[in-house]
Length: 206
Image (cartoon, rainbow, N blue to C red):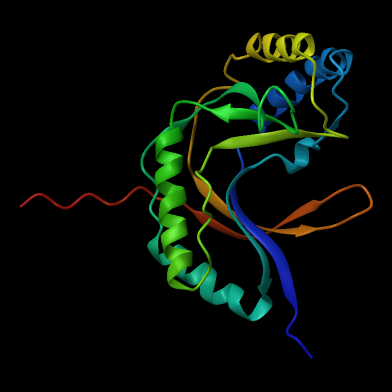
């Protein structure tokens, strides 16, 4: 019998005041995007996060080794992250994902993601070949299709009109290992391990 496994990923979750503001932004976007021809399945606010590393299925017996390695090695750069700037993946011509970006502090988040990739690579987990793009997924387009030029322009103009920061800057204080469980209402994310991110200690002066 094969060992039980969990589908999991590492992520950062912004503070609740920021997420409440993101939820208000989504309510503003819903009707205008539908008018542009985009039927979006919106992510529940309880599931908002910024993924750093998706792992897929991991044997339960390896979770302890992985969390110990990450906990011993990762150090967060002292930085404040700002959520701002809306966009779509893969492009305006055929939107499939509506996302909120990260501006100030994004480089520190990239460095943290590279540290995480290195730690996990030493344990045999494959590196993601795609470049890391810090973002928070707001929704996924149902029945994605090629948009006519007029609709593309309307979607782009709408999203660029709402590029203001969503809440105050916040520190990279915690990294979370989530389990992703499939439910009839969509994926549910359960925290398995929380890692406080402490700035690298300064070398004492001699």
